[in-house]
Length: 348
Image (cartoon, rainbow, N blue to C red; front, side, top):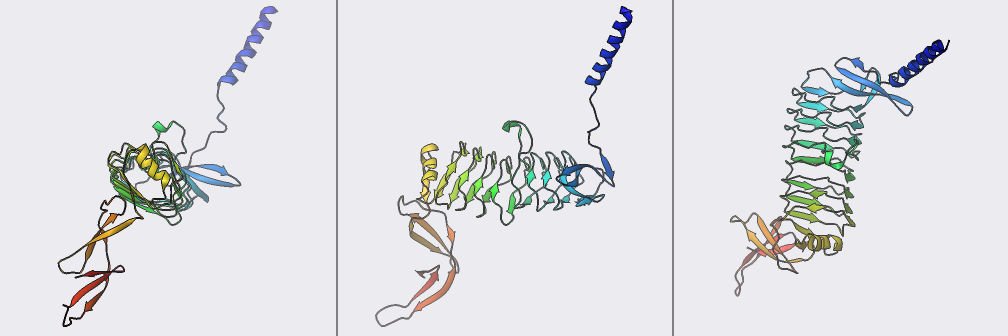
């Protein structure tokens, strides 16, 4: 009798153990197929949306549908289009708000990308090593580039490895440069931040090793940690802001030749340039002593502007000739000709 009870007890224990170690799969996502696309369905609030997980087609110029089987396409999952060498252009529908990490990585022949106007989150390395991509337009809706877990050292910017990406366009209303957005974009040589941007966030331009010049508008009030760190070729930062209220640690670092240009009211920026980095700071609002040079045919002119405080010469700027003025010859004076250039008269 005792042996029988022990046997029953062991059987019960083994049955319980079996149920505790075998994982339940009832909640696993079901991969659905529709034409060339694989997708899953996800509940978003009261709506059910589709998220693309893979593409099995071979179209070189691809317009991703905004809906699959009646479900709005909301996201493109990790590695969904990875290493599709045949892709030369892709249009991402305005229904998409999230592109996951490595989604289009290693699409080495991808030349043209149209991003969704509703895109909010562009994850790490989403377009990694798309070496044929030369230009991108970023939607004003974009606010994040860091949705995935991991330490900062494991992150790559969404365009890291896009070695020929050199032209960056910002849609009207772009409000901030998100963390890591241009990290590792070695093709960028200069950047003009739009005047709607208020902050340049952490490591936004980290390791852009060929970036030489940055123009920052007066709307920008903060520059994040390591935003321009390891931009080793950086020579000039021109800032028209009254001042940068917050400058993160190593915001500019390992840029041995960088020179700052800003308003004399920009005390934080001036202190950061001179005291923290030991680099020159030249005022852009205290200029005089213009030196004009005319072309041989007198149709164009260049001007060198000197700073009142340090007498350093700034770069040549364009001038526009608006009219020619002739002073008639008199019995006591020779006649003279002048050009009116941006409000100044210059003798010819």
